[in-house]
Amino acid sequence: MRACVHDYHGWLNLGEGGLPYNVGGWVIQWILKLTMAKRNTIDIECYARPLPADLTEVEKRRNTIKHLGPLLQRLGSRPKVAHWVIPHRQVREKPPSRSLIQVSACRHAFQSLANERQHVATICTSVLERHGSGLFVLDSTKAPAVAVQSRGEITHFHESDWSAHATLSYPDCEEVIQKGWGERHGLSGSLLPLGYTLLYAPESEADVQVVQSIMAAAVEFMTGETGAREGSVENCEYTI
Image (cartoon, rainbow, N blue to C red; front, side, top):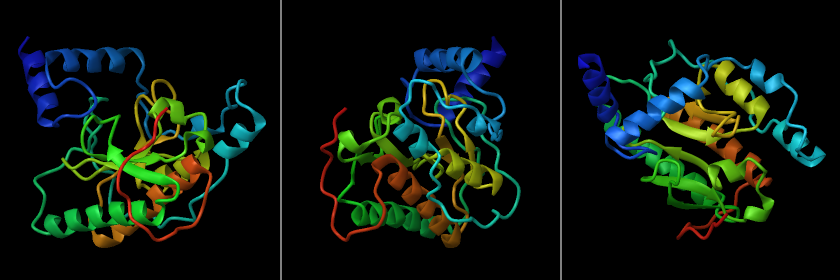
């Protein structure tokens, strides 16, 4: 019982995200973890497996298009990720003094990406996290089949630790994981799209640029369009 209480308080310390912020949410998390979660979240073999037979040829090709260019290898070892699957968070020490600059850079990168892609994507409250901002496909008719699982959500930052999630094409997932910039979500390929990926929190402004480029690749995959147009993002009109 003491171990359960300790685990529950550790889960609460992650902050809110995706599930009710109470004992019920903690129990649901453990049910999902024990019945559906993958243990090896840096395995990339899953992306080479045959795609579901019910996908059209267009959808199959869409999942195998590479949008990212070659990434630099991320410096240092992979950060520790909490063992709970929801919320899916990086375990970090208290942010260093430079984190104010980092936070500002992350927010600016997210808003800039949204402004550049405002013709295909829009910002509203994350449906996966149930709070905070997420970037969504603007036109659901152009979204891939996996958008149904994410309810049109493309990517979001977590303001608790500034890690992020993004839904990527399979080759882009491989690039991100192999170069040390992220890992699979434990529920990817079951409750969540197979390409749903955790992006580690940036440790520098250069890292922020890399994460922004990965998010941009997610936008291209989820909207089917490339390139940027200047503009502003006002509200969310996406429905699915």
